[in-house]
Picture 1: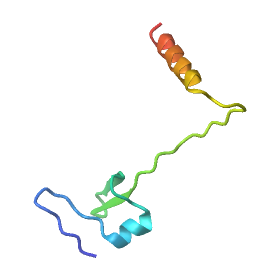
Picture 2 (picture 1 turned 180 degrees about the vertical axis):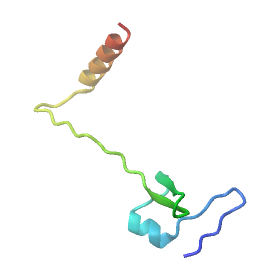
Picture 3 (picture 1 turned 90 degrees about the horizontal axis):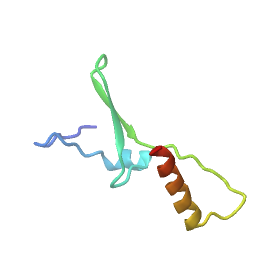
Length: 76
């Protein structure tokens, strides 16, 4: 599959590839250069989220207090 490089050295990822990889407008991709093979590897950038479960509802006040406490501890 040929992809044209623009005057700003930009490329467009073909629709078929974007759909298969789930890449949408505004997403980030990682690129790696394989010098030995002379290829660029482009893959979706996926953040790894950590989920924390609490046995109670967390309020905005709880969040604000935690941030304030963290900032105070960081400045000590």
